[in-house]
Amino acid sequence: MSLLSILSLLLLTSAVAGAGAASITLPLSPLSALNHADPFQNLKFLATLSTTRARHLKRPGKNSTFSPSSSGNTDIPLLPQSYGGYSVSLSFGTPPQKFDLVMDTGSSLVWFPCTSRYTCSRCNFPNVDPENITAFMPKLSSTAKVIGCKNPKCGLIYGSDSLSTCRNCVGNNCTEICPPYMVQYGSGSTSGLLLSETLDLPGKLVEGVLVGCSIISTQQPSGIAGFGRGPESLPVQMGLKKFSYCLVSHNFDDTGHGSEMVLVSGSGKTRDVSYTPFVNNTMAYSLNPAFSNYYYVGLRKITVGGRKVRIPYRFLAPGADGSGGTIIDSGTTFTFMERDVHGLVAAAFEKEMGKYKRVSEVEDRSGLRPCFDVSNETTVSFPELVFHFKGGAKMEFPLADYFSLVDGNGVICMTIVTDDVVKVVGGPSIILGNYQQQNFYVEYDLENQRLGFRKKTC
Image (cartoon, rainbow, N blue to C red; front, top):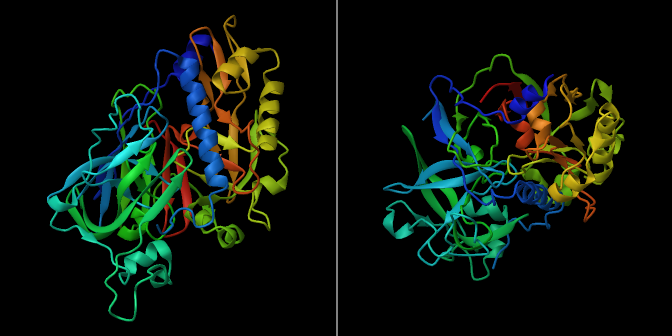
């Protein structure tokens, strides 16, 4: 492969993905949080963001996610966020108020900045004015209702004993509102009150959707659309049979190029898609209910250049203590692997690419490794990276999904990260991030409890 071809693959851009018949389409839009003048600083930021997110997903505090103090398809455009995620445009209320929310399959609550009192600390991102963030105004919506303690929707957050969290409720005369929620993420937190509101989709209204009206946040200016497995997630509340997306390639430049997300409420098979069943990590769920939000999948092995990486089984499959296994997460940028797993995969690439010089300086500056200098090469040979899943499904990654050109001088780095600062024990060992999902059609088949995918230029 010529060096010019390599650079073209690594800088691949994408077109808009098509939607199926009888579908509702929604847009995914970008937010900016990078200093584009310094590519090393950008990569370091995204690598750190990915590992911080992984720490949270691996060890969320017990019950810390929430604590007291028509049929057819819907197609939604998705756009890459320059800070490493993707956002979806959704409208709530009557008349509707529109917001761009981060699409997150690793959490379940849908929430947005709310009321004129909304404040966000440490939200000084580029193009974000923390004093002027667009917020939902319940008083302008005729369908906004505060959730009470006796409302079953309060139980979606606090469980079947939700009334026990309402200290002043006695008998059937309870008029107390559902306790305020607090949601913690790897990069921030948010808290507020729960509302019942109407979701206004193209050609379809969904009434009585549980949403979070956030009053205060930290490092979370945009709001989040939870697409996880929890009962309060958007797919579960809508009764969707499946949802899918095709993520346009990352350029981290906020150009506005996007793809589509498809919400499907009817049954039907998708052609030419490989499937692997979701894994129910019941031990992890019992130890920490927050894990029940995650989409676990059965990763059987990883091959580099056709050779199996000898990863101990305890990392690939959830153990008796609930640790181990693999989840897929749209909110993580670069795929995360525990230190022991990452070391084996990195060593496999170093062995296959041993003729190219490692560049430790770039590794230190970018937060990525291994990095290789290919600036003097006319042709470069890259080993193929393949994830092999239970059921025979194989995710054969395009080169642009696992190697990135980090500067204009011909240095490339593997875009899979680990945590060199804190070794977090417990939780999933591997988190399949959105960077490695680029240019794949990815389907969450909720009816048949399986993940489907196929290569596709998005």
